[in-house]
Image (tube, rainbow, N blue to C red; front, top):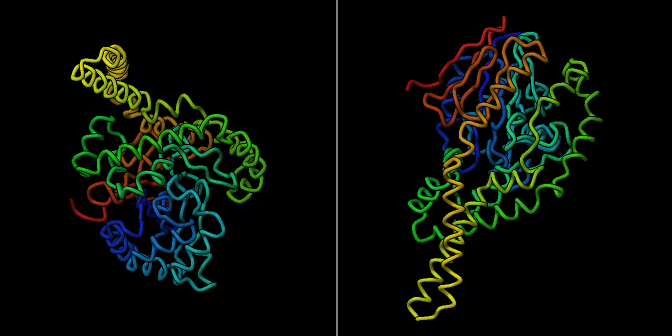
Length: 389
C-alpha cells in the first residue's frame, strides 16, 4: 500500500477560516500519490444549519482549492478516506457520502476512490489502526458507531443549539476551559449581548439534561449496532469477536446518565450562581425598602448559593481538565492490544500526544504549522507539518 497522510480535525465549514484548507491543498500537491485519510471531523457537519448532505456540499463548496485537489486525485486513482468523527458522524451514511461525491464533482467511475468509514480504517496491512477516538471520551462517545442514527453527544448538543445560533465557534477551541474563564471570554466578546448569550446557554444545557438519562436510547442503539457487527466485520476483514472487544472498550456516553450530564454542563454552578445573585438582589432590595421578608428569604438563599459554588470550585475549578486526553491514551493502548496494531492513531482532542503505541494527529486547523501524520508502507509513523511555524 502506498504512503498515507492522516489528517485530523480539519473542521471545515462554510463560514470558517479557509486558510487550513488551502494549506492542505498545497500539501497534497507535494504528495500527489499518497492516500489521504481524514481521521474524523474533517467536515464540521454539526456546525452547519442544514441536513448532513447539504452541510457537506456547503463545507466543501467553501474550499474550492481543496475540493479540486481531492477530485483530481480521485481521477488519477488516488484514494481518499473520510472516517467519521463526532462532528461529522453522518459522513458515512449513504446520503452524505453521495453529497460528498457530488460536492467534489466526481465522475461515477471515480467515486470508488473517495470512500467513507463509520468507525475506523487500518493501514499498512493492519500495522496502523486509525479512528477519530471520540468513542473513548464519555463526552463524545456515540451510543454505537454502527447505529443507524448518530445521537448528539453532550458537546454536539451544545454546538448545534447554542454555539451555532450565537456564532460562537471560537468557543470550540476553548471547550476545555473552566466555567469562569469561559464566562469572562463570553462577556468580553459579546458585551451587552452577553446576558442573552448566557441565558441561551442555560436554556440549552437544561434541555440537554432533560433529554439525557432514560430519554437517551443507548440500549436500543447498541442492540441495533450489534446486529450490524457481522456485516461490518466482513467489510473491514476483522472477526466479529475482535470488534465486540473494541466495543467493550468504548466509553459510556455522558448523556446516558442524567447526573453525569448535569455535572458535565456545570449546571450545579449555574444554579448556585443563580441562587447567589437572586438572594443578594432580594436582600439588597429588602434593605433598601426596609422590608424584612425579602431580607430573611434572600440572605439564606445567597448563603446557600455561595457555599454551593465555593464547594464546587474547591473540588476542582475545571474538574474535567485532561479527562478526554487521558481517556484516549488509555483507549488507544487497549485498541492496539485488541487489534494487534503496532500504532493506533486518534484525533478528537486536538493535541500532539503519543504513548508506547499511540499517536494523536493534533488538529490540522487549530494547531501551529498544520500538523499531520505520515504512515509509510512498512507502518512507520512520522509527524509532519504542512507549513512552517
